[in-house]
Length: 385
Image (cartoon, rainbow, N blue to C red):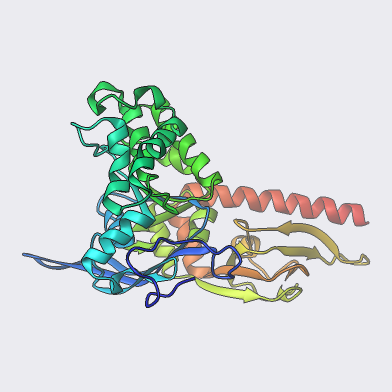
């Protein structure tokens, strides 16, 4: 990949699939954004560490005022961070000057807005050609064909010569997506792209995004609609200018964003090598373990029986809850599988029990898991006898 000192403003990102770093396309490192107001300083982003990989379709969600728009402005280069780095395709975009960054943005990012932002006096075809003209991409005599191909891809070939006002809202958003693809950027930034559409049109837009991801694009979509997160490959939650740990959000989905952020601030990460023991039977159990990546084997040791491998748990699952809720020492051996290391997010007993006390729905969900696992253990031990 090109470094920031090597890339010029007229170069576009070309993902290098042979590079070990190629998978990480967008990287924010300790990004802080502070605004000065009449009431004093307001910190909108508080040390954001976040990355997005090639070919990901990511939903970014959060309450109003959580920092979503500010986060997008950092990625698009529209605003400057107060501190920290934003590196896209190996380029530190804030080491480019304003004019270089504007041209870089036109060639490397396609931006889709909630209210379309199409030029009302230009046809859909002319709107789609605009980024090509601005960034001087493709020979001028080839631009109409390129624009028509893009409109055909989003199902608007027959509307190409109509003005935006002459087509539906869903068609206008489809045209905006075609325009975002005009320079063939590797990254699409979508800010509430379905917020002004009916459910049918919104579904069509998400289907278009799915197709673009299959073609190799990375899509980062801000949305207020929780149902949209069911269509994406990953969800990032931002709350009060901080990123919620994705493993915490996946394991404890019934908590509010504020509660998830509170847990995020208390957890620690632990990495165990393949085959390494995490918990031994009889050990004092003081932690709740959430699996970020990798897998663990859960093994019982009944009397007069060989070890029973009763479960294999993977990403998004958890363990350690039974002893914390029921009391007592560990009833099983738990170790990383022999295949790969396991990355765990760990919460201490006291905050874990506090989470359950403050969230009856979470308490019930985890208690149900405890009951199911106790029954599984009982059946396994019975079979051993």
